[in-house]
Image (cartoon, rainbow, N blue to C red; front, side, top):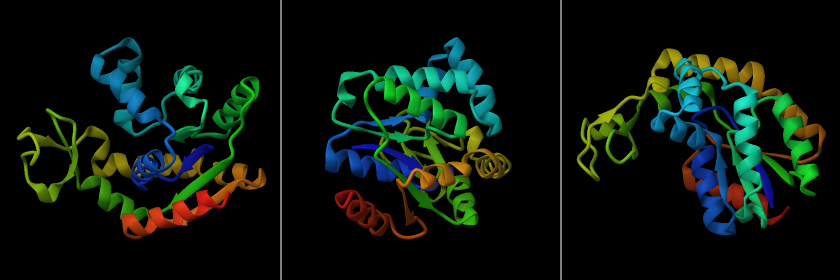
Length: 210
């Protein structure tokens, strides 16, 4: 089962991906995690990526595509995978299809988690990250991580101006992927405005019936 997860930043794709990993035993490939790791390590790639991430812009294709191709060649993807945060443009989708074809693979389903933009803005601007353990929490938790006691802070890409820019970028460059995968006959949509468990039940029902 080779899946692509679609949806605006903050739609809950990562949460649903973790449920899919647990249920089906396939790896989640999140370009966001890969890039943030490079940023935290201070590599040349990470420093270059950080400029785009902090502004809410897309990281250039040549950076992202190379990372994803290498990851798809790993042995743990033989039984399937979940792509979370990639592709983000039609060009990336076409590059992905070409790379998979060379490996004798293809995307089986594109799952879109649809959420109202204002809900996303409210979610992301309230999000806080622990400086010590990296745990993601909410502003309602206060200023200290309830797990490790580390300081909670708002990431640069979670302030309102940047979130709105990210949504504008998504609408302009990434939303057309809905049509791309719909034309391919493999698009499935779920309503992500609801409780996480309700969304997961819809996702599970869809995947079991593929």
